[in-house]
Every structure is written in structure tokens, then in C-alpha cells.
Image (cartoon, rainbow, N blue to C red; front, side, top):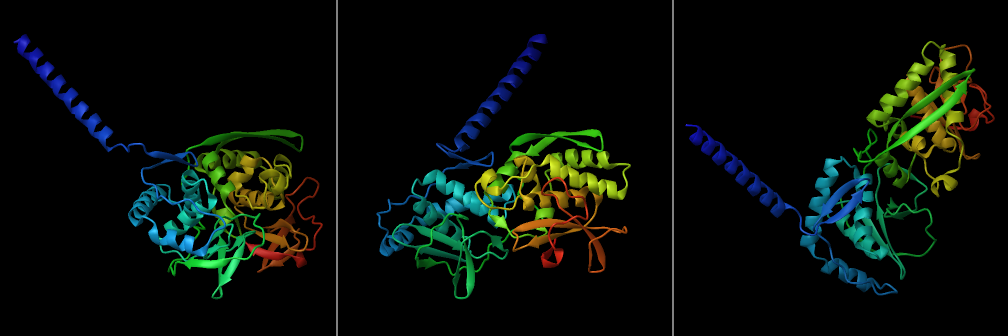
Amino acid sequence: MLSKERNKIFVWRFFMLAVLVVFLLKAQAERPVNAHKIDVYGHVFLCQTKVSYPSLVYPIARKQVEDILVQTDKNSLLQLKEDMDSFAATWQMDDLAFILFTQKVARYFYADPNLAKLFQYQLLKEKDYKLLLGFNPEQLTVYGRFLYDLANVAEVSYHNVTYADLSFSQNLALCEEELVANTNGTKNLEINQHKAPLFNALQTSYSFQTEFKGISYSFVGTLNQSLIAYYRDLPSISFGEIYLNYHLSDLAYKQIIGDLKKAVKGMSARGQLDFLLHFTQVVIPYQTDKSLVGREKFAFVEEVLGNKAGDCEDKSILFAYLVKEVLQLPSLALVYVHQNHLNVAVAVSGAQYNFIHNNQKYIICEPSGPGLQAGENVYDWKNANIVAW
């Protein structure tokens, strides 16, 4: 009897082993062979398909570009588009994030930046976007039609419609271009104004210390490095609700917003505002975009904390976000165009305020550097453009 039981156990174990072997062989067979591994903010895009192009001959001739557009392997292009669409859906990319994704794929495959732009144009064309392809003997440029305003980005007008340069470069030299192709697409490029993509593969830490009215405070936690890297690649997006809608990542929000709420607990309403203004002025030192990231751009909140520094726009965005999330107070951005400056007006109900807008009192706060208290302002708010965010 015991011998039969052992045989049953042996047969069962053999059966399970055979099933496991078959499963592993099947998984191995389905695994991409020689797949290209492309890094996308810490996430790996496995790519089996490449769109091949002949080498460009310089100076670039119109017919050369037109011939490449006609002769490109459509099947490879469509397969790659399908794979990229699936990956983009996983991380909930909007059109702007997808453009940056195409740039990463293009740079991986093509050493010649103009071939990379040809690829980007053809791939986005298959998604039915409104695009232009410009050229001169030295370079190609892909332009796209956005519904949301971008700042510090080269633009062209075609049939009274404005198109933005999709390289988002701020270092383009002025030059003459000819239109070599346009997609006649039906879709504008859109930006999700309510939430960022779900990139979350990488993390980094922060540690901030400050002293306020004789009490020391310490803030330690974790930031989403994938999102920070993504934000750094973005062009400047014109000021609006998007900067406050793009919340801190879940862990960062729980840590720093939770710690700030604890820090201001028990303070008066004015004391809480003063603390957050002090935090932004002192903990995040002032630094120009040029020296910090090499170009002019407006930073998102997680990016500002990751940079550990910022200019007037970046620090104002951070301060307005903290006021909104910690104190539940709305604010306005005050944009002083001629002075190239920005600060924040916070909604208040007390006796001290600087101006009334839409029947609401506001007090002006200067987050850029230490020294100015709430209500103090070196600029005349009457000369500022008021932006609700």
C-alpha cells in the first residue's frame, strides 16, 4: 500500500515538473528575440521592430526626402506604432508624453538626428496628427499643432494655423525652411491638464531643514525620480491650472504634505501662511533655470523639490501648490511681464490684504527669496497679468 502511494506521489511530481517545463519553454518561445531595450524614464520598452532608412546625403535635397517618405516600409512602421501605443497606454501617456517617447525611440535607432525626425514625422502621421515637415539643406524640422500654449518654443504659421517645433529646442538658429510634407491630419496634439503620466520606476530622496521662530523643522522623504526626469524633458507649458493639478506622487504627497500639516497645526491662519512662505523662500534656494537645467522652463512641484532650487516661477508654483494642499486656500499667479517676474496672491479673509479680485481679498506673497513678509511686494500688482490657477 505504501509503495502505491509513493508511486502516486512520484507520478504527480513528474506531471507538475513536465507542466512547468512546458510553461517555461512556451514563455521562452514567446520572449522577443534580440529585442531592443529602450529606457523610458526607468521603464523598459521592449522593441522588436525597426524602421530602416537609407543614409541621408548632405546637403539634403527635397527629392531625397520625398523618396524616403514614399519608400518607407509601412508594415514595420505600423507594427512599431502598435507596440508603442500599447506601451503608452500602460503608463497613461498624453500626446506630449508620447512625443517625448518617440524622441527616445528615434534617438535609440538613428544616429543622424534628421533621420530621427523623419521617423518621428512618419510615426505621428500614422496617428493622424496635424503635422508639418520642414527642411533646408542641413536639417529637417517636425512641427505639430497643439491645443495648449507652449512657452519658449519655436513656432511657424501655415494657412493661419500655428504649429510648434516638436524638438522643443530653444537653441534653433534662424534659417529659411521649405515645406516638404504635411499630414493633412485631423487631430490636434493634446495635453492632459489634470494629471501626469504614471511613470514610477525610479525614486530619489529629499531632506530639508529649516528654523522658524526659534523651532527647528526637518522634512525627509521620497520623490518620484521617473516623473522628475519626465518633467525636465517637457517644454515650458504656459501658466495655468496644470501646474497645481499635477499633484506630487502618492508617496511624496503623503510624506511632505502630511509633515507640513503637522508643522503648522496649532498656528494661527496668518502664522500658517507665514510658515509656508518661509519654507519656500529658505528651503528651496533661488537659482536661475539657465544655471539649473540649462534652459528656460517652468517646473512642476515634484521637479522643484527634486531640483532643490528654483527661480521665481518655480518657487511660486511650489508655494501656490503648498498653500492649496496644506491650507486649502486658492491663489492667483501675478505675472510681471516687463520685469520678467512672477509671484503669488493668496486668498485671505483677514483685515490685511493688497487687493480685491472678483470680490475676494488677496495678499501678495513673494516666494523668490527671504526677507519679504506676506503683504510686502516690490512690484506694482496693477501692472501684472493675473492668472487663475
